[in-house]
Image 1: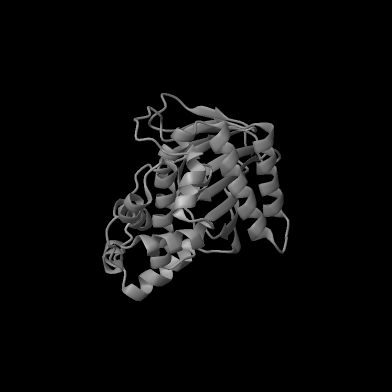
Image 2: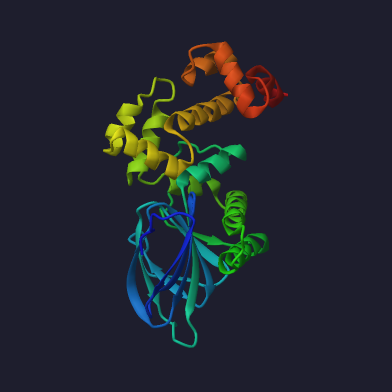
Length: 297
C-alpha cells in the first residue's frame, strides 16, 4: 500500500481487499480504497504524512501505542506519521456493503508551509502524543473531504488544481480545529525516514551557513544531474531557489518575533543587508524593516 512515485496521473489496483484508485499531483497523493471482504491486520505504511478519512463502513486500526484496536467510522479520520506502520481490520466489509476510505498523503513540508502562513509555530516542548492521531471532523472539514472526493471522482480538466486547493484548505481547517502542535509533531516524526526528509532537515539546520549543493547530492546518494532533476520534480524548485525560499521564510518568522534586520540578515545566511532587503521585498512585497514594523504594531 505504499505511495507510488508518479505525478499528475490516475491509477487503479483491484483486489477484493483493495480496489484502489490513485491520483498523484505535485506534493499530494489522493487514494480511494474500497474493501469488499472481511480481513484482519492488513499492514499499512506511508512515506509522507497521511490523512485517512472514513467515508463508508468501519475500520479497526492497530498500532503499538494502542492497547487495543480502535474503531473508525464516517465523520472520523486519523493521521499517520511518515514511515509509521499500522495494521487495519475490515470487520464489516462485504461485496454488497464495502468499506470505503479516502487517504491524502501530503508532503510534510507543505503542512509546515501552511502553518507558517497561518503564523503557527511548532514549539520544542515535549508532547505526550502517539504518532498516530485520531481526529473528529467539523461540518466544514467534512465538506472539504466531500469536495476532495468530488474532484477525485469527476473527470475535471482542472482536477489537479482543485485537489491542490482543497488539500490546502483541509490543512488550514485541521490546524485550526485540532491540536496543531500534535499535528506538527506528527509531521516531524522521524525526519530521516526518507532521502528528502534528510535533505530538508540538513537545509533547515544550516540556513545560517553556506549550503554546498554537492553535500546535498552526497546526502541523497545521487549524481549532481540526477539530484537536480529529482529535487525539482519533488519540490517544484531548483535546490538554490528552495534554499532561498526557506531562508526568506525563516527571516520572516524572526522579524515577526521582533529581531532587528541586521541580525536576521546574517542569521539566515545572507552576506549583505542590502542584498537581503532586495530579496525579501521581491518575495514578500515589503522591505524587512517595513514588515517588522507592521508586525510589531
